[in-house]
Image (cartoon, rainbow, N blue to C red; front, side, top):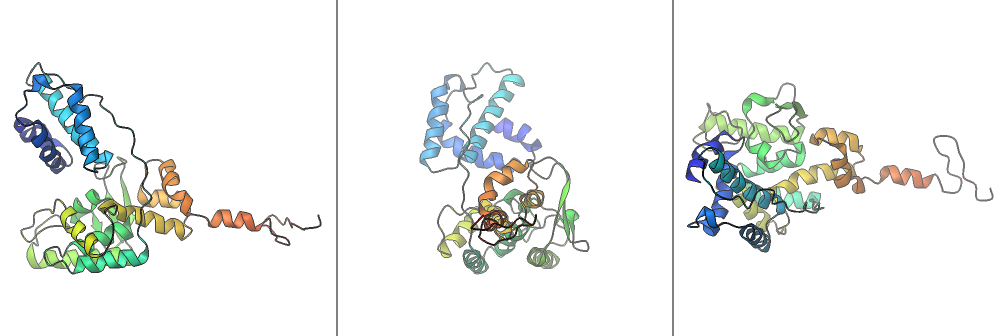
Length: 294
């Protein structure tokens, strides 16, 4: 694992993710001879992580990282060891419906502003809520991709999940967050390429600890995670009557069916309009009138 972390892992888009995975894998498999690993070990690890209440997406990343390391050892180091994690798939996790009500979002932002050692957290939350960015996209955002004049955040194919180039418009709240980061940069690390950087200019790799602290302070449940911010953004758009096609484009989903599955149930205006056509005396856009006697 040491050789893998210092080699192939560094070439990944987000090598920090492997460090988090290794932190979970090491206590379970540390000291084991690779030749003794079995499929039962893989199943037991999955069961353990589910008992820990971890999301299936996180577990997939952990076992996927271990599988990649074992494959690398088999191919590049020519080690004759088994890979019980290969093709070890989990059933897709159920879609979570959790999103924040406006008053919950306000409480979360207020709690974030009161954290003395995480002044960046409120800005992180705003970009999730008002630009719909994924947590990794926020922390990986570079100043070279921010255009405050045109009001856009740009993404290259390597910067987002769908593998396509694109952009996201910056509204007033997102702009406020970016300007706050710009002010911090000017005061502490003017040469840093990262929008979310510490005082030394290094990229902030994770906000889970501070986010959980703000979440608890705001009185929100553990089902609220950093990704809930993006889910909230889409949910608010749907509730405001924004068409699913536009929500899909704004959130940069690779397939509109993903958007429809997650947010369509929150967009009831179009169905309400259809229902009113059946009201006695109502006139539809086509001119049809529904009369009780008829």
